Length: 223
Image 1 (tube, rainbow, N blue to C red):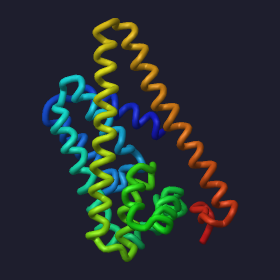
Image 2: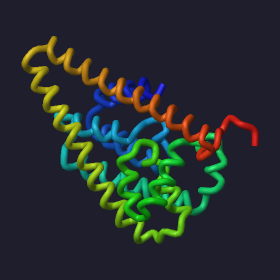
Image 3: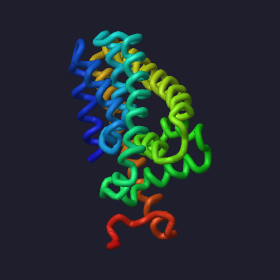
Image 4: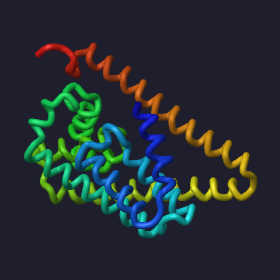
């Protein structure tokens, strides 16, 4: 389901032009951590598509870089505040209860402390949860903001530029041969889907292993 949603989103975004592109990319990157949209739409998908649209001349690269970095930093800050005030209540909801991402995010915080905010930006699912869990911890916002800004800058720049490189490659292929460009795009889309499916299966295996060992609560079991 996640793979099909991600693929559909990417295909839809590629048809937009002008201000709407920036609005949608900004909302998706911001909402991944601020509103836990990362459980449905990975933020890197929006960042990659934003970079690709810049390469296809449907958006400005500099503006997209600034937008994604700012949206990532502000989104994490909102997630931190949500964690401060609503963290314990959210952890009892079915979406988070017994979730592997919660376990990974907590493990990062315990092991690395402040740098976990930077590292969590690069880990699937943990990216959406680290800000909120940090807000529940005793870490000061000033410390959080430093690592949050560094992570948002590095992550946003990396994925937007990666999307730009991929978009440039696709544009060159399209001008060379229509059939070849279609094959390249198809292989690229298939690769994304395979990666997402593989990641989901690996996470299911990891979750089951943690449940069997007693380190992770089974959300389906009665309390």
